[in-house]
Image 1 (cartoon, one colour):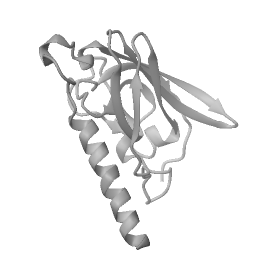
Image 2 (cartoon, rainbow, N blue to C red):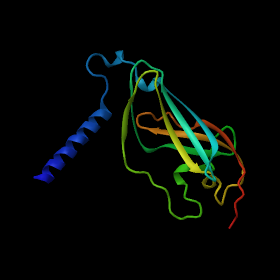
Image 3 (tube, rainbow, N blue to C red):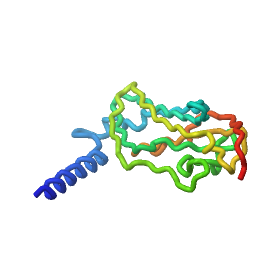
Length: 179
């Protein structure tokens, strides 16, 4: 009986989540309601900070609702992807992608917990999303010191346009041994 209740609760939760993902306008003419996704704007910044004795790369993405209606957001634990480029135009393939980073001198990779965060972003409000990593993981053993132009992808469902948001540049000067 306990198993049946859990299955029923899980099924109900799935229906609610799936229903929320597919919802549009409620009643009336759907064309009369402004699409809230068109009213979201994103900006990003990056900086090198020092935490204890470790230099860190910190990138922050701010999503602002400039529209008249709340915007529904759904995202996971790793909502910000950081890309590094050698040119200011940030075109072509990045020389570094935070999705593929590993702890320095390790063969294991980072993972993200499987969680779904949901929130409504009210009009004229902002939401901040952050990425922080030890700077050594950017240059590791393969990239040289130098200037990198960063971009951020904000991985929020139903909003695919938040890619390659210019996130500033960083000058990396690390002294690290080469193997």
